[in-house]
Length: 397
Image 1 (cartoon, rainbow, N blue to C red):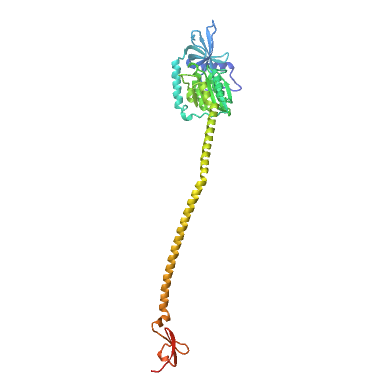
Image 2: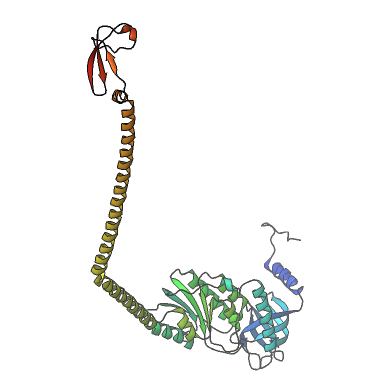
C-alpha cells in the first residue's frame, strides 16, 4: 500500500530510513555478477572493501567482506560472482553489499558467455553483411579512439600520415581496459559520431590477453557501434581471439597499422596511378593522331579515285539515259509515222478524188449546183472527171 503521508503529517527521516531498510532486507541473499573496479586491502583489518561495477553500464555498488572471503588472486579488473546480502546503513543512508562468498569467473566461463552473447547479437542481425558500410575513399577527418600515448595511436597516425601527409585526426584518448573502458569508449564513439566532419572512426588498441580485450566484446559497446551512423573500423591488435567488435564493425583490421592502410589511400600509389593513366591517355591520343595523319596523307588520292569512279558511274548512267531516250523517241516516231500512213490512206480512200479516180464524175448545173437527179438535168452541164472537166448538153429521152 502506498504510504499515507501529507504535508501536514510527514514521516521523519528515521521512519523513511527504517522502511527502506526493511524493503532491502526482504531481498535476502543474492548472487551478483560484476567487475572489481576498486579494491582496498588494509593490513590488520578484518574487513576488506571493494567496488563492484556493472560491465555494461556505469553503475557500481560498494561491497564489504571478511578477510578470508577475498582470495589473494582476485585483483582490480577481475570478473567475479559475489554471494551477498544487501545492507542499508540507516545512519548514513547508503546501500552496500555484505559478501559471504566471492568467486572469480574463470576463462572458460567468460568464453562461454561471450559465445552466447555472440549468438544472440548475430540472431538480431547486428553482424549481417548487408549492414556493413563502405569506408570513404578520402575522409576529411578521421576519428581515433585509443589509449593515451599508446603504441596503437602512434601506429595509426604515423602510418596514415606516411601514406597521406595531409590526413586529419580527431583523437579521443580513453581507457582501453579496466572497469571504465566500456563507458569511456562508448562516450567517445558518440562524440565522434555526432561530429559531421568525421567520416570514419577507428577504435584501436594493441594486443593483450583475453581478459584485457573483454571491453571490446561488451554488449553495450557492440550496440553503440551498430547504432553509429559513421563507418567504424575495428583495429584491435589480436591474433587468434576475435572480439565481438570485429563482427559488428564495418571493417575489421588485423592491427592498428593495417587500419591505417585501409582508411586512407597511399598518395604515392595514387600519383603513380594518375601518372600511368595520363601516359596511357597521351599514348591513345598520339595513336589516334597518327592514324588520322595516315588517313589524311592518302586522302587526296582516295578522293581522286572516288571522284573518277563517281564521274565514270555518272557518265555511264547519262549515256544509258540518252540511249533510252533515243530508243523511246525512235519508237514514238515510228509509231507516229505508221499512224500517219494509215490516216493518209483512210483520207485518200474517203476523198472525192479517189471516187473520181474510180471512174465516177461530178455533174454540175450552170449555177454550180451538183446534179443529183437525172430529171433535173437541162441545158449545158459541167462534168468533172478524174483528170479535168468538160461541158455537155442535156437532151430529153
